Length: 339
Image 1 (cartoon, one colour):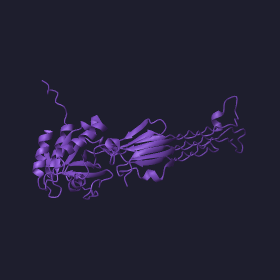
Image 2 (cartoon, helix red, strand yellow):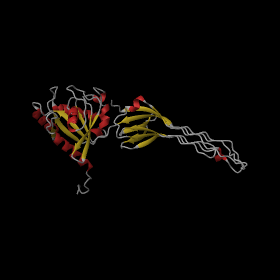
Image 3 (spheres, helix red, strand yellow):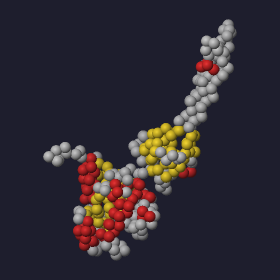
């Protein structure tokens, strides 16, 4: 089950109390105070783990306290610090304060972490209060309580390429053919109800992370169909691959289907609509597909990659086009281009 939102409660450990103690040894009169400090409370740390891809584990268990510090002891012994509590989340998780909505950290890379709730400071033992005038203090600090707060977590998958298109455009089948993913595939719309990730091995050195998003329909930005809530997962993608049925199953026009998705992208985010895009005519094994792909190419004024996930037609060309677009984004700008 894919979960991309969660609300959790975190609490740093309380600091241990300081100790009131006096040195008592034979032949050592008036030994003086020797109460040690209390230990610091543990921190609650959120850390990005590359082995996780969902926030599912944080739904059933919502409270995450860290360990409390131990109290100080006589003989100037410091109390042990409380154990930190590490909460693992997928890379791409945005951590927000549940009350203010302020972003604490965007954990985009594996190993990124943020202290979500700091532990309390340990209390001072009576040794700390001794002065030249007050040589036998009988006071000590209580440990300070740890921070506590509610956190709102939002996951935005990080991928190189995002697959978009109308329901039944063939995105899941395509992903299963070019990557190691095994998404659910069926001959009816909305088969994909949650984002899927796949790794495309393009040669010995190049790898492409591809995200398959549930199909969009007209009005998705207003909540029609599955809505547009999953579009947040392609906000971090660098290239969009827009699949259009060369022969739409509903008998419609391929160009109209293309423009429907473009309109929904624009309604959701102008920046997302301006993302580099590869237009793909899918299901080229069907009768009349050549005419549909030609009409799509003419209507958009763009080159269209023709593929068939069933026969394997054009899959190599599509992967090459992905690599080319990504390489163009990574290439440094030419400082002499305007001269």
